[in-house]
Length: 358
Image (cartoon, rainbow, N blue to C red; front, side, top):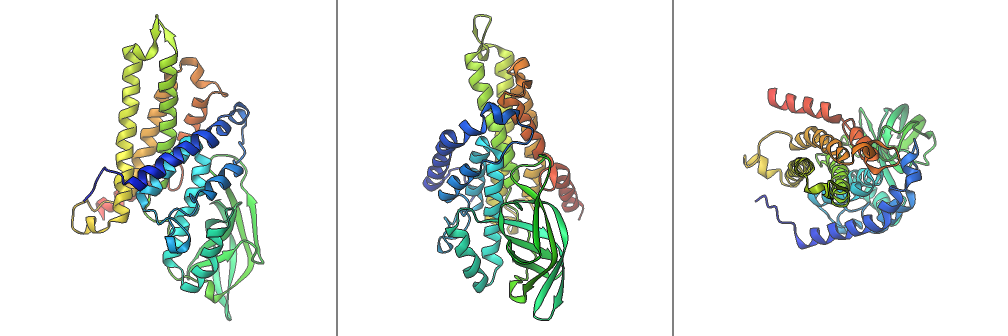
């Protein structure tokens, strides 16, 4: 049965991550120098600190060195991290999602080889790329260049999708080169991966075609951004005095804050429902839930709802909301990026359209 009650373990994880974000991430992420930078540096120290807490391997089973967290818990953690910095949430969430896939799809030998390294090395990240592969004797030969690969500059293992299936390719394999992607229209770390006569053994094939799955981590990132903007606007409205009283006492501002809160709660409901459905496919099979891809519902709705909420939060600051050294400028930009992350809101709607008409 779908329940809105979080377990004691989920509440403890949420509160622990929220405290970590408040103490270790926000003071650095919201530093004025970083807000003004066109290309903001990745907070690698904070990413490693979060990894030491187990947030990078959250979705792995306990036997594999993880916490065995379900999809809902992963989304809760992702929202909390994104409220501090969406780049950190994107890096850790991407690795956690692919680690979950790797554990389920890899052979026992592959799991023993790679999951052990993943569990003990706090800098071990995963990335998903595409390339062409041809069989050459006992090996596979990879060719091609994949662009806009999330986590590529940090990854020590690539899950490479080919026409024959997915191959596990270490970063240090001969013929693999990575170039960090210029520009900053993405969250986390992004790069270009080139495979030039990259030879990997046949045993690297996991067979199944790797797909990130139906966990709505990207909508959870947008939700965290929206919550951070809402909390900033709420704090400011309590402090800013206009007409002899804090502006939160004026109906126009109070109504705007109420609208923001409504939008975020509806978006959170879509994200949590999709996450729960990811862990309970039987709820779709017995028609307790609709047969629509609920992760696409979350991916289509949440980023658009959050962008509206963040814009309204910026309006609570008046002219200060557009200043480049103010957090709201960052939140608006971050929320816009979420519209185009992954397949984007438009791509998610096309997936829904295909499900409806198909």
